[in-house]
Length: 205
Image: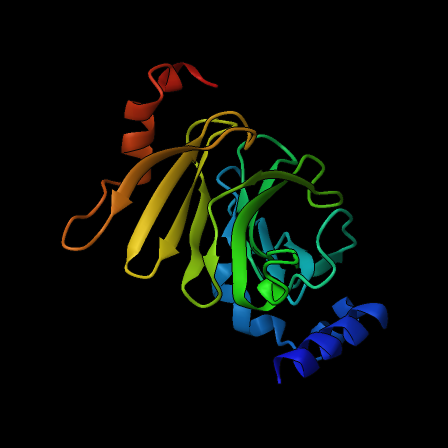
């Protein structure tokens, strides 16, 4: 069954996998993941159905942005808008590559990664990969830009019941672990411990 599924995914990719996914995906079901600009409350970005969407009227209407640099079969992710004009962060789960020792890894293991765009979502660059895990066990819980400091953001990645917080003040180039949340032990709000983790954070990146 797994072999059949792998074959199906390969066929879909060869025939335009992004379109195959998009035709079976409801963008409106992902609206709760839309990110609002800290600078302009009417501006929102959304990543859904393998595509980047932009709104300038608080989400009443959406414009599709033709984007380059993203994985072909990416379906949904978490997007965040930095205070820096044009700077966006996108958190995705990437399938592990197939190897001789793990031929089914693309179906069984994923790795969280952050892509960054400097031009408002037209082109994306893979900026950082985090530790991965088994499909269905590891997921992106959130990615958020700091409301006060340009070039700063945090990501929350969940491994079963444990959530690991990472912070950046380098526009996504470097991410450092800031807190591990394992109930009943909870982390402080990300902005607070980012400031504590980066001594010069209050002075800007």
